[in-house]
Amino acid sequence: MDFSLQTVFVTGAAGNLGRAVAQAFAQRGARLVLLDRDPAALQRAYGADDATRLTLAADLLDPQQVQAAVDQALQRFGRLDVLCNIAGGFRMGEAVHETSQATWDFLLDLNARTVVHMARAVVPHMLAAGAGKVVNVAAASATQGRAQMGAYCASKSAVMRLTEAMAMELREHGINVNCVMPTIIDTPENRAAMPSADPSRWVAPQDLAEVIVFLASPAARALHGAALPVNGLS
Image 1 (cartoon, helix red, strand yellow):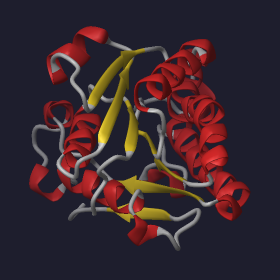
Image 2 (spheres, rainbow, N blue to C red):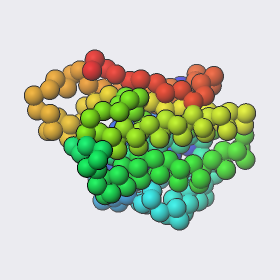
Image 3 (cartoon, rainbow, N blue to C red):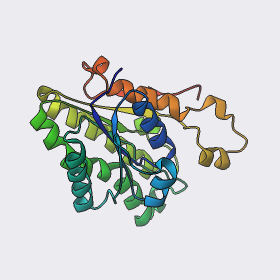
């Protein structure tokens, strides 16, 4: 899977999965646009920009900042071939009837609204080009409601429904839209939160990144609206 001369836009690029996705595409020759809300985290993760990498700090909940970032990416590289919506968040512990407005807004904003904002800014350019790939990150828990996780399950289920809707809207225009549904990802944060668990059974970020690369490749050209489970041994 060669991504030479292709431009890949990765949101949440300073996070654990974002870094793994960026590395996987870089190894295949892609030009990278790496967006995160935290400029210091981007600097720590990637250092200075170079001829094939552009780091951008922006708040994905601000449509104007999102559009400005996309415009800057196009000015630098001239095209956007792949959009990987990696940014997201997790929170649990409240029953549905106890869910605070803050929790509801946090999860729906970070997991679903960011997808809409990125689509609004990027998809018109893919339509003009007649080609593109969009890969979203849902979750295995999006397939059914779970106790004390109602808001999270709803937000990730929204990502799945957005993926399906976009796929139906864009598949006749040469654009593939799909998503992955990981279980627990092996991150330092999850290890700290679950010290008695066996992280070897979880999904390594690098393994999930390989699935995302596949969905962005020509090998997945027949997939539209797919939600691929990525379970590891969990």
